[in-house]
Length: 382
Ligand code: ATP
Image 1 (cartoon, helix red, strand yellow):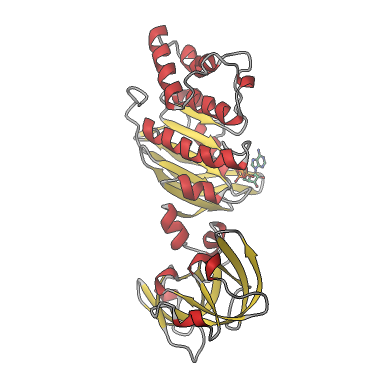
Image 2: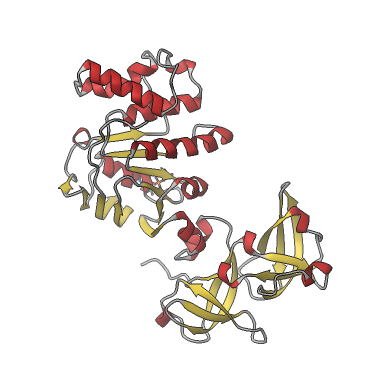
């Protein structure tokens, strides 16, 4: 079911946007293009500028400099009601005295859409958001998830140029949040809506977005698909923000545009990994953080029976001592202290059946070359 004739939505261009509050540069020169029909996420820690950027897109706040365009149209100076934007925020702000259908239709009434067309569009939005049968209920007779659906239906019924969502799931309990992730994505995709979604929850961004911009201190650190951002982060900040990242200290032996030959100790065999480094910044002998995610790291008892069964293609990284193990049912998380150069302790996430060791045991660590990723050393923010 689609929402009738959507407007021809165009790309959203954000160009050099800056916004300061006193001496705080909340948004510090952000340039992005969100493509028509895309589900785009702004993600980052509290205070990184996500909401400030969203408020400028909505027209609630004017940038100090920079430009926002919908297609070729410069909307930077337009008032919120001239931008045809749908909004879904944390508090749903539904009208308590109106029914579901009246809440959904409110924006159409304001826009003086003829009654028959409005009724048709309200029904379409109600079907799309899975609210059929609840049209006559008042918001206080709905669950949190259902109220969220009404908020979405109300935003989409006006066929917005752009849908803005700011932490829309934060009032819901954990189980409902996960169910609504799927639903919001389905609804946006089915209606062809271009959406920009703000969250500090990296799992929400990874599981729902087409592309995501990871922000820190008012700047975009990386803008990529979830898979690329998670596997090939551009910096330690992005690597650690998007999930647990084990960081080893590798010596760069040789580097080309795409590949780097590295080793973890001078007596260790070299191996090849992909990287996020400007080759000129990494002369031979320099040390750089080598990332591997916990699920890609293998730990086996030193000289134990499982060692012989390992894929021979894995790189032996070094030996380590088990600090603790945490059983989570299907998988077990293991913290180890390595005996080779590391940044902190390492974490291994293994299938519980493969963990035949415990606290104090000595293990050998292995990882596939393809799952390791060399990062640039942090440079102080300019
Ligand atoms: P959160 O996830 O906590 O909502 P955020 O990433 O959305 O954070 P913003 O709300 O955009 O971050 O804030 C960015 C920075 O700008 C913060 O340092 C914040 O304190 C500051 N800031 C935001 N709005 C104002 C304001 N109206 N006056 C002064 N400072 C502000």
